Length: 459
Ligand SMILES: Cc1cc2nc3c(=O)[nH]c(=O)nc-3n(C[C@H](O)[C@H](O)[C@H](O)COP(=O)(O)OP(=O)(O)OC[C@H]3O[C@@H](n4cnc5c(N)ncnc54)[C@H](O)[C@@H]3O)c2cc1C
Image 1 (cartoon, rainbow, N blue to C red):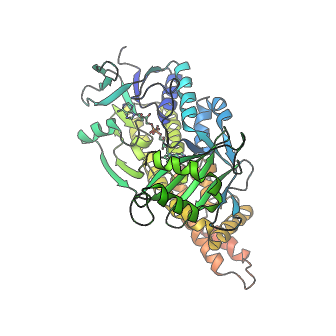
Image 2: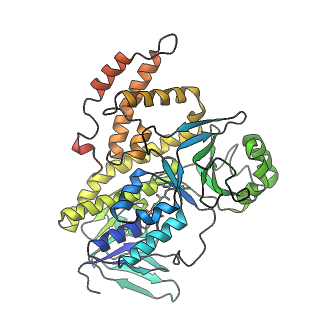
Image 3: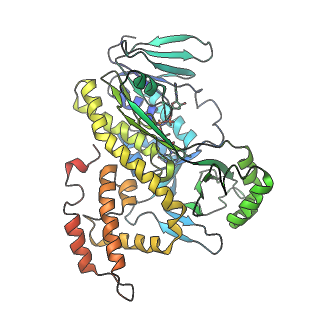
């Protein structure tokens, strides 16, 4: 294959196949390299983020690529969070209030298969069981090794797009060439996944919500699967009390589960089995400066900006990267200029969602059960109803308003939090809100209506 118009995309996880598909639709010859075996022929890896929350921000790029119709049948709608306290009935908190403001649970393996098949149909050359070893910066060649034969070879191309995840090999080559700096910030909490079996073929818990058991220093969540099961994820400190290290045997696990999650008592045996045998995953944020090597290579998705999963945004952000890059390619220009513009547009937003994802962990594991949080959330919705052009709760901006960049969601969100704090502390004796003050604060502090500032758009 000649180098001209040939692009190598590294990584057939979530962002890679979508980007490969978009590039193929633009007429490029695309090779997609993946170190794993073809997901359509095998069994998914156990206990590794089995399902994910997909939101409007991630759906829009799938629509752009013409693949959403294939993804839609895989989706399980989640309209709210159900909070499970240690005792008592718990409560349900809607994610949003406008029509269609819901998130979707989707199985990673099924989504991956759909994206890979769509890329193949669009003409992408798939090379599974091919590990990328890195990039030869001068020649632009991608160095690979074929797993079965052990044969090492080089692939020549016009440019390389690296969607090879948080531990990106291409990023290591860029760093070695002095093109990027990488700072990894591991979280001191790990995660383990469990499967809550279906009861007589149906879901054992309400199927159309995300379940959360917030416990202050840690939390358990459950997302529904379309086969009637739930995937539960326990996020817990690595060491200390309580921690994964302290829950080393079945006795300790049973005592912990019984005390913390009494409503899961009927399923305890199966869940503890999973906890004992499933892998313990690590989480963290990777901050990268320098996402490209002139026009020769570009990082996207987790390779450029891995984040913790607590806002359910890593995949959504990776998909959004693909759509932004596709828009820039549509406008035209040299690779180097396109890549520089991509980083200019995306890096501030990546930093914003990295921060908001960390903040959301504190919110999910603690505040969602607190009366203050719930009162302020209700006030946020009321302000959105009264001033819909200027005030949208931060969570809604991130999940349901892909036209607003993450950076803008963070900026407006900070102003809104201050407005809510001021109004909440000025409540009347019977808990009423001064809406004249609210109107003044919203207009003074959020003078530009949402969508009017071109710099605040996603790209
Ligand atoms: C527990 C957990 C829960 C999550 N929940 C959510 C959620 O609810 N919503 C959400 O939006 N995001 C979520 N995420 C984040 C999401 O999984 C990632 O952000 C997303 O997968 C990133 O996509 P990507 O294509 O950049 O990387 P990946 O999906 O990681 O894909 C990288 C691919 O590259 C391949 N690869 C790696 N190295 C090489 C190499 N040297 N050569 C060839 N191939 C290689 C890998 O095998 C893999 O297939 C979660 C993550 C975790 C850990």
